[in-house]
Each structure stands twice: as C-alpha cells, then as structure tokens.
Length: 152
Length: 174
Image 1 (cartoon, rainbow over the protein chains, first blue to last red):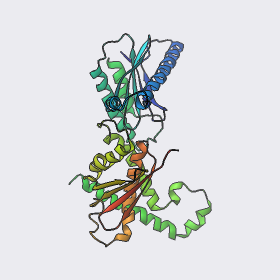
Image 2 (image 1 turned 180 degrees about the vertical axis):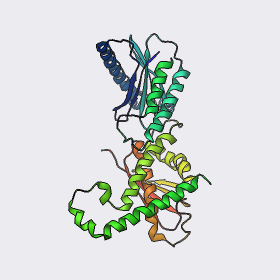
Image 3 (image 1 turned 135 degrees about the vertical axis):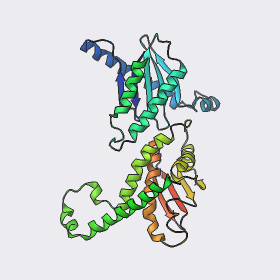
Image 4 (image 1 turned 45 degrees about the vertical axis):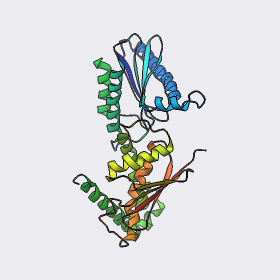
C-alpha cells in the first residue's frame, strides 16, 4: 500500500505531500505525518547524491549509463518505509513511500505511477494561475496522488 | 498547417496590442499626472519587456511538458541542443539551422526561416519593426532555460528577414 506521494521543487521546497494515514487518533496522525515528512527528506539526500555524483566515486562510463533514465529506483529503506524516486529534467523530484514489508510494488508499477504523476504535474504547471515555487493546488494533481495512495 | 496558424495570428495581434497600448500611455496627459504614484510594474514597463516576460512564463511551463519523455539532460551543451532540436520543433515546427558556441557560455542560435517572421517579408522591408516580433521568442528561450536551471540573457538580431540570430549568454554561477 502506498503511503505517501511527494513532489519537490528544484530548490528542495515541497510542492505537494499527500499521505494516506492509517490511525484515527489526531495526535497519532500528526506524529505519523511528521515521520513521513522526515523520511521523504532523507530520501531527498539520496536523490541529490544520485543526481550529482562526486567525480571521484564513479567512472565516466558508469555515470553516463546510470543517469540516462528519469526513474531513480529504490532510494532508502528503514524498518517502516521504503522510498522510490524519480527526477525530471527540470530537477523536480517525485518520491513515493511504501510500507517496508510491501513486495507488491514491482519496478514497472512504480514507473507507471511516476509517469502519471509527471503528466499531472505538467498540467498543473501549465495553469496560468500557478506561480512557480508555490504549493501545488491543482485538483487534478491532488486527485491523481490520492488515487495512487488508495488504489493499491 | 492548421495548428500553427492560430498561434501566428495571436502572436501578431499580441504584438500590435502591446505596442498600441504603449503609444497610448506615453502620449496621454494622464501618464504625466500619475507618474508620481505607485503603479504596478506591468503598467510602466515598455511593450518589448512585457512581451519577453510573457514568453518567459510560457517557456517555463512548456519545457516541462516537452522534456517529459526525454532521457536525462546532463550538460549545458545538451540543454542547448535540446532547445535547438526538440523544443524548436515542437514550437516553431522546424529545427534550428545552426548552433555555435565559444564554450565560455555564449551560444548563437541561427534560424534562417523563423516562422513568426516569414509572413512579414523576405528581405529588407519592415526590418525596423522586426525586434518587436522576436521579443516573445527571446522570452520563450529564457524561460525554457530557466526551468532547466540555466540563468541566461537572450537577445536576438535580425539582419535579413526572415533569418534570426538568437544570442544566449549564460550567467555563470560563481
């Protein structure tokens, strides 16, 4: 079950974070939301590492083959959550968080999810009332994100 | 053919409208009277700047959509090549004819048959009016580059219609 979908700007500012929270108690929900935000933040570090590999760590051959794709694959995992990443050419990052024990999500599924999110994001950006850098308030994008969280 | 025509006509009308408004505000007495008050930025800038700003916002949004399917663009030169091929084809229906660089951050993009100028003339006629017709496209390129994380200054020169040379100066991050 997907737990959280996040869209992050090129300056690492969050544009959209949708969580599927399981508990009903308000305090517990806040705590869980905080944990998810923190986890997404950690995943961002890995994304940055993948996008700007230090020159000494990778040979040029491996670097060019690894970075041709937009999909970044599995990022980090702790005992509760696992994160997948996707970074567009405009340095906008998408992070998908799933439960750690979850083996239902295969690579192909995650790629398809990111494709849908990317299309919805392009449409949200094209809205003339949206200023770059603001929080995304597009109904279509929020509905797509909720759809991803609920469907699995 | 049918898809380009609305944009061409809209663009010509946009240029005419902006410049007509500029004429109006500079010639009425009200402009002098209100000069001391706090006017919004859009009221006081000239038409070419407004057109360029419009192009900036449009380019910013368009590049996200156009770069969606492509593999990762890593270097600055790759960015310029993307602008010259995919971006140009998607918007201006053809690829750029020539790209030159001095590898110091200055790129010259040459298009010999710029589709927004083709209906105007093919030669020296209307040469003095041509800058207003390329302002929007300069903004388009600047917006596209900005979304790809490259700050730049884009200007255009027209020597013979309809050939246009866009000069892109990339601001080096120091």
